[in-house]
Length: 269
Picture 1 (cartoon, rainbow, N blue to C red):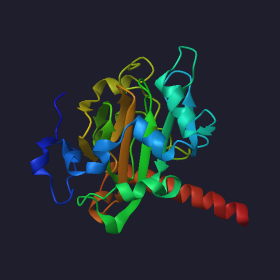
Picture 2: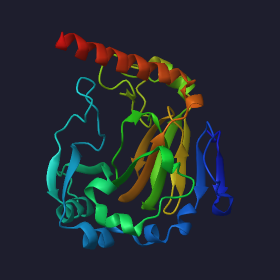
Picture 3: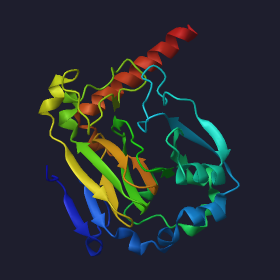
Picture 4: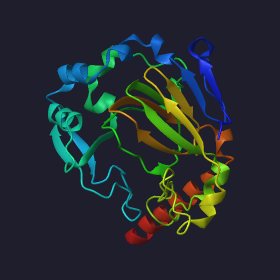
C-alpha cells in the first residue's frame, strides 16, 4: 500500500520530529559529511581491530526467544575485520551475521568525532546511538520500539514494512508475560495465513531506504527491516513524550514491566 506518511526532500528537513506517523527524508545525510564517507573499507580502517559481538542466523531471519528476550542463536565474537570478510564473501553454508544496535559511544568511541548529532534528534532525551552492519538478505523480527527512532541509511539499501500501532492485535505479538511483548513471530513478506489468519486483515506499508535517506519511526509502530544489500546504518533512539503514551501498545509495555517487577519482588521476599 502507499504509505500514510510523507516522503520529503532534504530541503524540507524539519527542526524536530513530533509526528505520530513515520516520515522519510530523501538524501538527508547529504548534510552529514561524515556519513557520506562511511563504507566497509573506511570502517575497516577505523575499527577493524575491534572485537565485536555479532548475532547469527541460519536463514537470515533473526528470531527473538520470547522466553529470554534475546535472539535465539548465541552471539559470536570476532574482530570487525573478520566480520566484514564473512559478510562480504558469504558462502551458501555460512551463517548469516548481523551487528545489531551496537552502541557507538560505548563500543566505537573513535567514530564519535566524525559524527554530529542531527538537530532533529532531541538531544535532551537521547538514549542511544547505534551502529548496524549486516549482509544482504538479513531480516529483523517484526517488532516495535518504545523510543522515537531516526534510522539513517549510510551504505546499501533497506526495505521496511510497517504497520501502525492500531493493527497490533492482528500481528500475533508475544504475550505480555514473556520477555518479548514487542515482537511478533510473523514474517511480513511471507505471511502464513493458516497459522495467523487475522494477519490477512493487516494493511502493510512499505518503503525502500537508499543511501543518504533517513526515516523517522515513531514509538510503537510495528516494522520489519530487510537488507536488500550489504548495509551500514546508524540509528538514534530518544525517549518518548507523554502524549505518545496514549497508544494501544503502551499498555503492553506497562503490563510487561509491572509483571516482571512483581516477579522480582516475590523472589526477594
